[in-house]
Image (cartoon, rainbow over all chains, first blue to last red; front, side):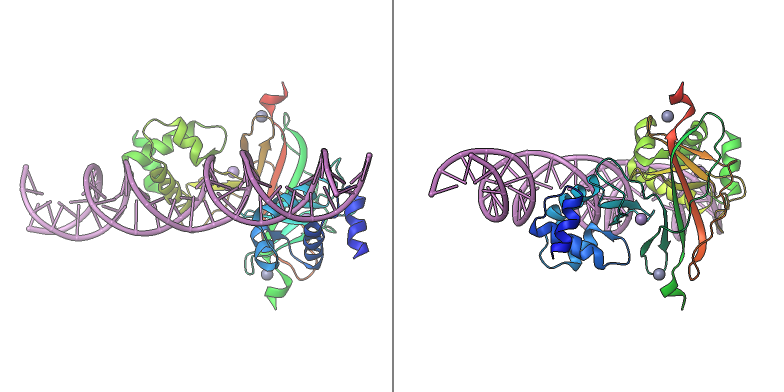
Length: 137
Length: 137
DNA sequence: ACTTAATTTGCAATACGATTGCATCTGCTT
DNA sequence: AAGCAGATGCAATCGTATTGCAAATTAAGT
Ligand SMILES: [Mn+2]
Ligand SMILES: [Mn+2]
Ligand SMILES: [Zn+2]
Ligand SMILES: [Zn+2]
């Protein structure tokens, strides 16, 4: 458990009971989770507390928000180099239209985009829809 | 006005008064519009009717849905080759974080994405956030 | 033009995720 | 132990999306 506490402290988040539980839960997941997911899958749950916990996590660079186009916002743990100053682990997200799971694919590089003159690029968001490994077999 | 009627008929949509008004409105816009946008900017408006009008338009390949990550779904007119059988005008969408407008950039090609083995790609969705032409000057 | 059937429209009501207000609780400092 | 700041839990609200149903409109047949 000390492990989890250290992880929170490293991102300047006070390690409360609730936060440890949510972090522990998130670390077990292979897919991104919505607030409702977390609420339903965890034992002790209050939607609002989870909401605020996740918001704190996001603000401090511990989780990132994923809008996969399904209309429901999901969250996943960040890479180590994100912090309160900003998120740096921009990567591709894969949405499986079969099982509705969303996966981070941090190893797949996001290709460069050339915009028409006049448009200034700040951030590229790439969502790929398809069928995931598990659903293909 | 015959012009608008023809456009609807071409997509197998019955040209009613409301539909002509919405289509006319959409043709004037340079940015994608949310249901609320349409509701507020048009005169005669009922949110539900607009909702269903847009849904019909979408089903028949006259408009496409854009999820720009702002949390609000927006819509824009399709290219000519979309129809009830499907949408074929997949392209990049640009979201300006300054004016919150979302623009279709159909001329900017979406680069190929190489996924890890096991993931089967169906559709690539590319959203670029930044500052638009108008907001830069 | 008149009647009738099918589709569309408008209003009320609901669903549901996100967010806020506020009182209470918890953990740390003095 | 008392005090304080932040965290938590519950109720309430907000905003958008969606459905149900009755009235209005359109299309079709005579
Ligand atoms: Mn991710
Ligand atoms: Mn578009
Ligand atoms: Zn899947
Ligand atoms: Zn702009």
